[in-house]
Image (cartoon, rainbow, N blue to C red; front, side, top):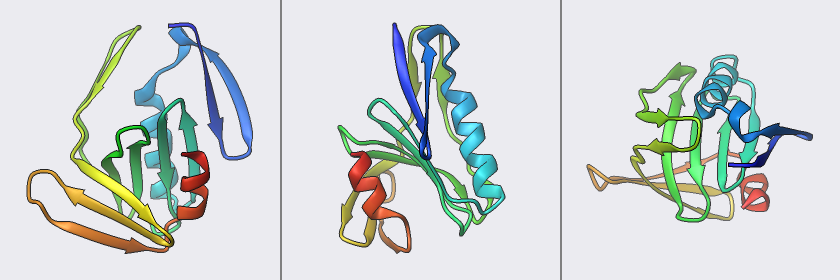
Length: 127
């Protein structure tokens, strides 16, 4: 799998592909959400972020896929299968960013939710 760059906030950390664990990064961002601490972690085409409102998300910027990781500080269930060389995520919906609005469309219900107050300008830059 090679080397992968992981950026947490303004710091950058390079890890060996075998030492990388997506589940650890999910746990990290869920912990930050529980602390109501806004953070952004980028890993290749993936973005994990938490907000000061206690929400957290995992995004695939290439395909605009999304899964909520936490709501109001409480972790949400996520299906994540991981091996040393690959991982699979059950994406729950799609997202898009329109200016200050984070727009999420749930795949199962078809419900579309617009959320204001997320760091959309930073998410768009990490895109």
